[in-house]
Amino acid sequence: MTSTRTKFYLDKQRAKWSGVCAGISDYTGINVVWVRLAAVIATVTFAFPWTLVAYWIAAKSADAKPMELYGDKEEREFWQGVRQSPRRTARDVKSRFREIDRRLADMELYYTSSNSALSNEIEQLR
Image (tube, one colour):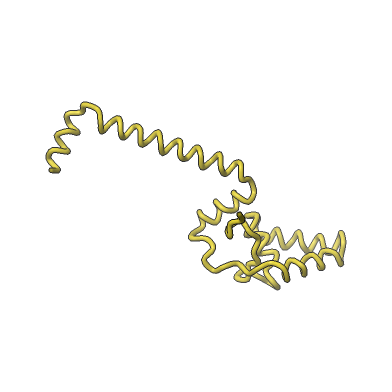
């Protein structure tokens, strides 16, 4: 199952020609200026017709990025991390859940302990 957030899209909002370099930038998290510079250098120095053919194929085969793909910058950075290293992202999410679980256990211990001050506060709220 492919998530819509892990798929390559053309970024028409930041596009100069067809959005391929901006889409690569969005997909990888690399600054779009560096992606465009690498594309120009590859075109000029390495294989002139093949980079243009690859660019044209990407422009014709990829879909345009949906307007509301990401909610905010943090969500965009999270999904870029998932695309770059799914294992690292899964490990980070697992450690966040461990931290949340530890904090909930601390709260539960505090709430269920025989803390008379806490008991008095709860009784006052009733």
